[in-house]
Amino acid sequence: MTKTSELTPPGAVSTRRRREESISEQIKDMIIERQLRPGDRLPAERALMDLFRASKGSIREALSALRSQGLIRTRTGPGGGVFLSEIAPQRAMALLSNYFLFRTPTITDIYAVRCQLEPEIAASVAGHLSEADFTRLERTMRLYDAPPVTAEEEYAQRMAELDFHSVLAELCPNPVLGLYCGFLQTLLREMVVCRRIYDAPHPELRDTALHYQIRLMRALRAEDAETARAIMAEHMDAAQAYMVAMEASIAGGFLRADGD
Image 1 (cartoon, rainbow, N blue to C red):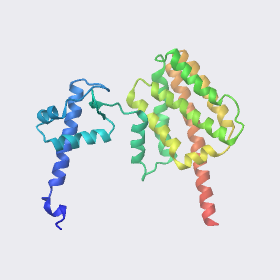
Image 2: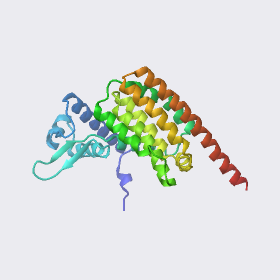
Image 3: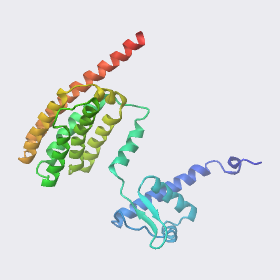
Image 4: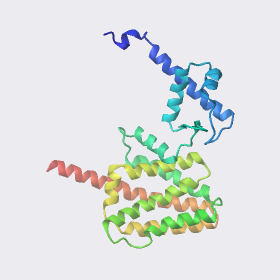
């Protein structure tokens, strides 16, 4: 039997792939130019073929690529078609996390960026928060306003402390800054060494987090961006010192175990 690869001219596959990628990008350009929004319907397949002077196969491959990226969804039946979808932040961060699957950053790497960005997040939301936003932040803080009873509860409280920062990132008026900070928090939740650190009992951390966050909330209610920035910078410096020290301690434990 003749192999498929023997029937395919050299470079044909890569040329076809480039063509499909080009159409995908042109569809994105069309979405922006027409100011389409999530939930809007894309033109029908025949219309896209005519618009981009492409074959049915090329259009379908381009749409398949957009679907895999989470930008479109297909609905069948009456009123069906291809509709635009908004990518959830969680999905975007999951895709970014895959990039670091084989090049895991260190805690020092993460905090080198976090110490720069988190204070800017705090300053950026000052004067932009509604009462509902404050209620949301306070609801997160209530999850760790009492000492934990079990190790599991302490771990859950550590995650809730990160959630406080995630909420601030979501409320940030700068979507790029908010996404980057949210992603750093996702890395901290997912990294094995961080999970080991969060598993270690350290009840004083709850008091420390509340100390900074209560001060921060006061500054935010006063719409004092500079004070909010300074408080968050102080908080990040303290968090960095603790996390880096714990990372070194855990690494030292591994080395001693190997030596045994």
